[in-house]
Image (cartoon, rainbow, N blue to C red; front, side, top):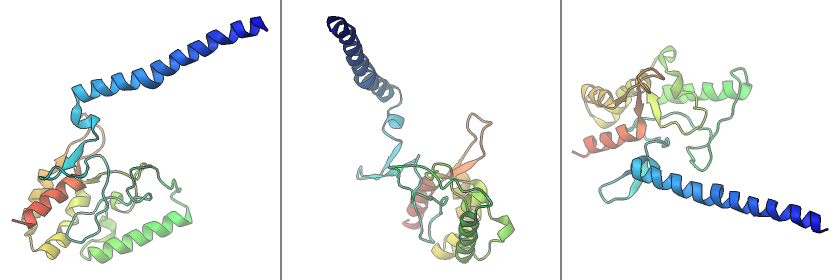
Length: 194
């Protein structure tokens, strides 16, 4: 019995030490370092209004449905940052085909001038996380006609706004040029209220 107790005491002691090191000390130290080296990112890349209230995050998609704003990607989780994920339907799945067809109809209804074969894929499909805050440059540009018609803002002004918000490829080689939907809509809102 004494041998068993002598065996378990070091195991329990080591488990408690590892729990304190990995479960408490390491997260506190790494969070502290992140707050010092990159405070904006450590806090979630939040965007605040003039009153200091949080509007959203540059990293999480927002659900803009009003025709006066740029619309982002479809989110199978409703842009709920509490969880992330996608339906993971295969392209041949009947539910996926039905959803994409409905997305095309909705997009065409909101943007009658769009040709179906010119619709960027990111406007009718969701990302793997369901939280993608960005759309392709083409996806932003094809929405200019609708927004111009709804707001009365000249198309050239809106195209310049889109070009102002182009973010490049990651590390200059990965991905494609894209536009952050929340950031462009905030500038669009300012433009409408001038």
